[in-house]
Image 1 (cartoon, rainbow, N blue to C red):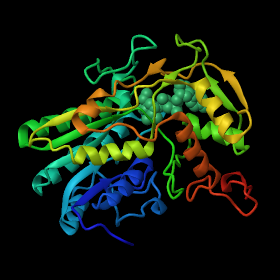
Image 2 (cartoon, rainbow, N blue to C red; image 1 turned 45 degrees about the vertical axis):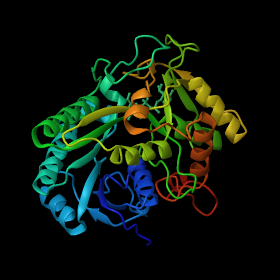
Image 3 (tube, protein in one colour; image 1 turned 90 degrees about the horizontal axis):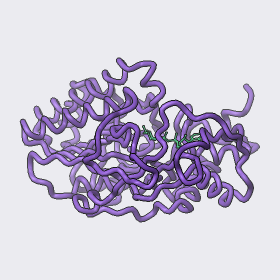
Image 4 (spheres, helix red, strand yellow; image 1 turned 180 degrees about the vertical axis):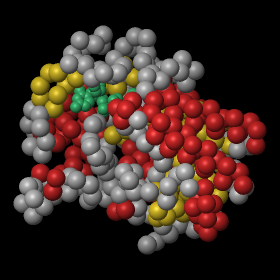
Length: 350
Ligand code: UFG
């Protein structure tokens, strides 16, 4: 494996969707990404741009050993649980992994003099989102998470900010809106199990790899009645992490920054875009609202430009869908991998 020669960056959760794309972006900028992942939801095959250390984010000894062995200079922290619905059923587990895991990491970083952190946060910290369908959400908006998942992301942000004040850590929390798409190389992409996200489900329905899509709710106060979201290409998200590392913030600085485009797209628009890309209408039915879905979650993206000098480059809806489709047609790992007759392994009866 060809390795960069620049500073080593620990990427916790680097075998996951956004983490793997960020490891690739780091490598492309000459850094040496070192992935730390327990592989409970990530994939060994997604780790292609540096070594993989298998470990649990709550295991301080394993983190310390990794930091020493690889001469880690900065950390990008993705490791955590992400399923909103599961967080409602198992809040204690989410606090344990997402908050206690972050505490363990911060302690080890302090003990080993690692002073720079980029944290994977979420628009889930804002809860019910904008007041009106045409309003974007700035970083200063009220924080009222609507799930234990969102609570743990906000709590971890507070913990990190307190350590910046107390110990001079420099940190950026990136609040992602809707991550989507895949690396144009086709080497890495989205592989959640179970998959709950709109774009992969719509593509699976259109390709005949999955059931018809259910559109959750058509009676929201939005222009076409379906929910508005801010879809951001995962390669743009990855670039935002590198920009956060390179933002040149002073010791002790903490910034929480939205990562989105500022453009809301409705579920109906996404379904149309997938239909255009695949060349056939997406089979779908109209269903009830999904519990907890805010009508509109669209970023005010200005702070990312100011603080990180970052703007999205690949996040037109058609580019996102085209890159997602390339991956879904031929995923390299996950249950979507195809058998000899082109059917997904997950669909082949055993
Ligand atoms: N949707 C459908 N049918 C589906 C799946 C989704 O209509 O089968 C709709 C949802 O109702 C929503 C939109 O498509 O309006 C996007 O849904 P996703 O599940 O793709 O994404 P979410 O906006 O629910 O989730 C995102 C992130 C989460 C984060 C959450 C915060 O993926 O990690 O925003 O609200 F927690």
